[in-house]
Length: 340
Figure (cartoon, helix red, strand yellow):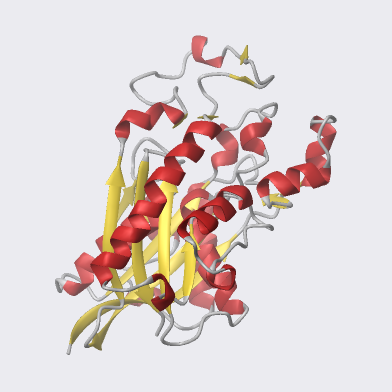
């Protein structure tokens, strides 16, 4: 027997403001509700308020977690916050969240800047910290407000992305078997410009020039301060990287497709997920698609999906779940967890 990291509980938070397909078609009259839904599998997105930032969503998700009574704030020895929409350049948003949650001042805290693969990367960091004996209890929070990067006319991204946060409490338990892991990772930085907000960092600081909007061939208008996504290339990247990652992960864990009880991939959009499912030949009853009510919340889609499946009693004790994140970076990662 040895100490193993395991997911003790998850709680998510969605902003109160909603953007439905009925509201979207007012801006895009050549589309209809059915067309948007069939293309994305999404009917509603939660949108952060004007003054609502990643720290606000993160705190709300963590407070929901503590309210469940399964874990206590004084038990948290380390806080990791995954976000690409931080409150400030500095200080790290995790430090702000630590103070607002009144976590112990002996608690370590840092941010990781990763998108759709961020939750799995976060789990790998936490596993290493716990199983090496550094700490016993870690709070991993994913929180994004991508909507603040979107131009109102760019329907290619506005129909997909929503805001949200998820708080995961990961603890130590004695077990003969691995409860989180193994892992596979991948990076292809040559595709960094396929999903990007060009302006805002030190490479291209915000200026009067970066506010200038342009109209593109697809009819969308955006400035360098808005998010750009090459949907076709991201789709091609996903079809290439994810099946091979799944194959590698199964080989690494000495399992077959049938040994996994549920596959929970990054909830990008329904069309992409269904294409992946068919390509990898995953049985439909084992494949999770449930972002209809929140959209693509980037690093939060996987923990949100796990929480929803737990609420539906679709996950039983002892079940093995394969988690795969993929997207902005370009970056991808996969792991297998056992629900205990």
